[in-house]
Length: 269
Length: 364
Ligand SMILES: Nc1ncnc2c1ncn2[C@@H]1O[C@H](COP(=O)(O)OP(=O)(O)OP(=O)(O)O)[C@@H](O)[C@H]1O
Ligand SMILES: [Mg+2]
Image (cartoon, rainbow over all chains, first blue to last red; front, side, top):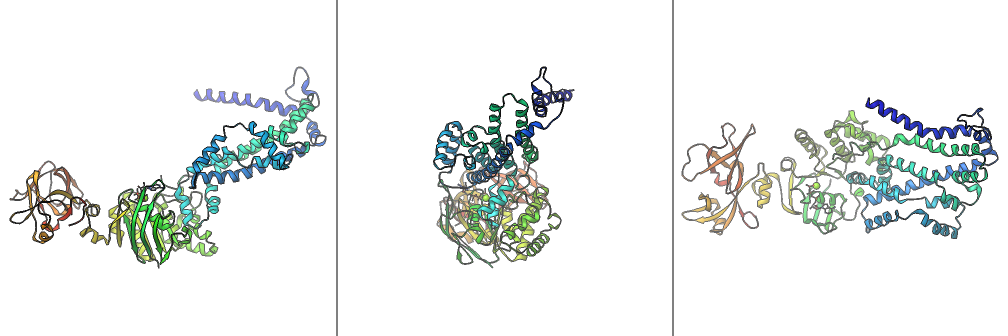
């Protein structure tokens, strides 16, 4: 009985969550104006790919799509690299001023990113990086939350594992590469998903930092679309579908790596 | 082929705690040396300094005559077995054992051959493809040892490698490590807080307390000629009994416990060195096997004691009683029936009494 209640609750919530997505998808497959009739139709009378064609041919959205993919992948890769090295160092190395430095970083998390945007913009402008991919990549190369997350994870790796590797003849980088990274896979995947989604969905900073239409990321291009084609909901929905598909793929592909008991059995507690 | 030499080695951790004080120690080639002492006495710190995992505050460490103070662990040609095994959880047993060789760029076939050889010695052939979490505690321990022997290092370091195993397995691994030592002919330094392990395994035992060396010597030497009260109490199980009292001279020398009205006549052999302690407080030590309890009527000079607990162990029977507010242990005859709550008369083997300065604990 309890189970039935639970399941029906879960089914209802998933349906409620899914309806907007399905509606978006079905609208994107309608002909021009078909979504604006009254009473509204939930399913298209005839399924057409016309909206997607428009996006790719007339609006050149492939370029924006590439921008988004490229930037998200690059930022995710680079930031995972730097965050994991920094997080590992903060967790396991002994150096002067370590705690002070780390606390300083944490304090920085309080500052909202909007505050730093203008100075950041001016800085990048002065070195001529505005309206280049570097404007997005440099600012996303490392982030405090990521460092914090990885540090917390590394704290749970026993020192003796690192010392054993050192005795085995591993250099610092080999320890990082062959011991720490494999053990951090679950947390790296988690952080990778966060970073990918964050970069993919980011709107404000790309809007500021990228000025040419050909440099726009998808969300920026999409909002542009909305301004220019307010009377064209089918086209907008097609753009939205394009925007969320990679996100869903990334999530589905990586979710099985989510935190699992990889540490079990290495040392006796 | 390796000797290890420590010269006045001191370790002060950041924060000022002095973990190791002025330790000097000579370890010969192929020797099995055991560092033993109570928790926190600095055993691990000494070992980790030899390994290169911990910086040396002052003093020098030599391996094979070469000073290694500033040589990183990987270039010291030393292997270490950790108390918690420290196996790499994401690697198979084979990869765990091969890791050190791979990093040193050994040829693939050579790696395979060496790992298999080590696995054979340790009886791990059937487990090479398993992950550490699929092994029992004893098997993990073997893998940790395998990881050390596969590199054929100059010196092996063990930091309480058996303390996580159950009693039976511990005894078994103890003999296996001893055997390994004999077969490999390697220099081994072994840390433990268990005096039985120290006694049974070591060629040489180093007793540490509060970061200082108390005594260095062969097991039986420490047992029969302890330099101080700490060593006497640490080596031997059950531990030595200690009684405080006074030396008094009348017709001959007596050890007197005043408030209990107990006088123990001392043998002739101790006379000379004890003369100077006449009328002074000292501590005597008696091993449990030298305390004899019998139910026969006490003859003059015997002391009557009330046995509180009787622990029959099979091959021996341990008897607990209180004297002068300290817990005493006697090793009883296993063939005799003892009853707790009964009075027995105590005799002491006078030739086997140890005498200690009451203040500094040194043997007189
Ligand atoms: N990293 C450290 N920082 C500060 N003090 C330390 C550190 N490691 C150990 N100590 C101190 O140094 C002393 C010796 O420690 P050590 O680990 O060598 O003892 P041990 O003899 O191995 O004890 P155990 O049998 O419990 O393992 C202890 O008092 C300990 O508190
Ligand atoms: Mg220790």
